[in-house]
Image (tube, rainbow, N blue to C red; front, side, top):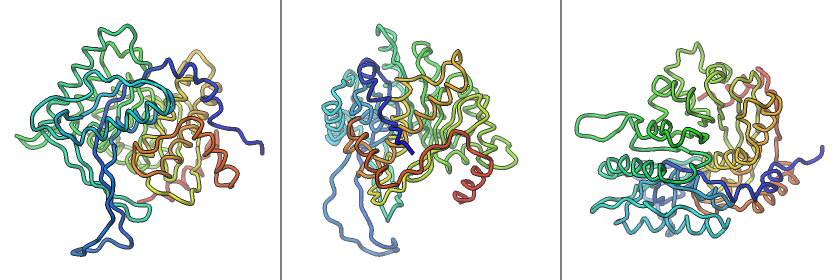
Length: 395
């Protein structure tokens, strides 16, 4: 069968990508990772060689991936100016800017305030699995909502709003905990989804646990009115839909729930996805790459989201004036390119480290195809295929 490159349409639209701008809202973390051989045992001591501190967090991952592809970004980050470790994230943004030639907005990049600390994440990798321990400051969480409001005020004075808003994991949006603790219950995400200045921008949402654990009742109205694409992995979306009163938390039932509300992307491991365009009765599958050397899956979902947004900027699948067939084809192309980006991210360590240019992605796609490790695309997934995926991911 003839090889159809998912990268070629995006590469062919580089001139339009260079004029686009994406607002990225979400996490910024300093990541320190450890790899454990064998099973992690209680009371055991492990020795590891020194590991570098890397930049991570959803907004940083989105921003770095887009910059390396030549797309300008406006990052909104919980980045503490007085914390010297914050320079790790600034350096990652600078490196990606140099790779793709696009620019990122530096005004209000960091939050001022004595004693504030940028979130710190310790990642423990064991084979292809990982666990993350997140440390974040309640003071920084409180300041982040003020910081976001200042960015929204700045946008009111800009000549042109961003083309796409990407919202990732906002730690401060966790459910309101006990008195004296911090949590905004989704208010920061709500601010960016409903901001009048951003009404014309397409919204791509890839929630973290602080947000998706709030459930469908918190987000249903906003999904239907303000969200263009909603992305979670298969385990996360089952948690999200637990309060949706579905008879079964099957993929078929979840897709039925999303059909009248927004386009949904459900990611699978290593690294594929099931997607459904809003209003369409057919699901599209980007089957996982059979990667031999997975180094780290950290940030793979963010990389896939960045790829889908890059494709959206070249060939929009949300314009309802177009035929449904055309829009489904464009959505499938976006999912195919996002799959390449997510799979590439599994071959590097860290969510924002070693971000590829469009040419790097094209070479990777060609190499994996030649090695017959590409499961390909299906533009009309059957109920039986959805059932088999449910069984494979029944955890």
